[in-house]
Length: 169
Image 1 (cartoon, rainbow, N blue to C red):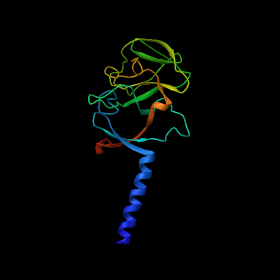
Image 2: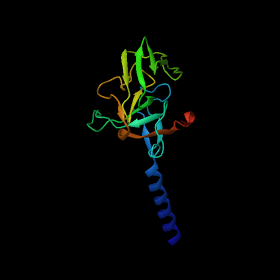
Image 3: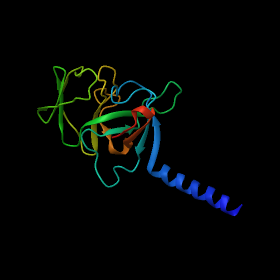
């Protein structure tokens, strides 16, 4: 009986430690297709930026002021396009960073809708876009805007479901 109790306590302690560093999340929308699809289950590294800074191309989950239909906070999953100090613009369906056209092979349609005059990413903030730019609610929308480092919940680490699409990011 003691060994069973000990094993359960060890398992619970390990689970608590894992949940401190990693968290599951479910993709609820289509804004990151074809990289991520609705109902994909991701594990995010909650402490990913404790000792390092977010990088171009990182897929992140972040808090927003938006609400779900049930009234709870809506977290979004997007790709970091601009880091502090970067100059970002969108023209003719193409994203430019620091004057150079981005090569974005992950885009669903190969094109970015809308136009954006050059903006400079502020300190401790990030410019994020979805991979499915036609439907993505991202930094182009003033309700989202730049995402502060404090809003980041974590970096996508693994897609664990569906199993056939398992992937390390």
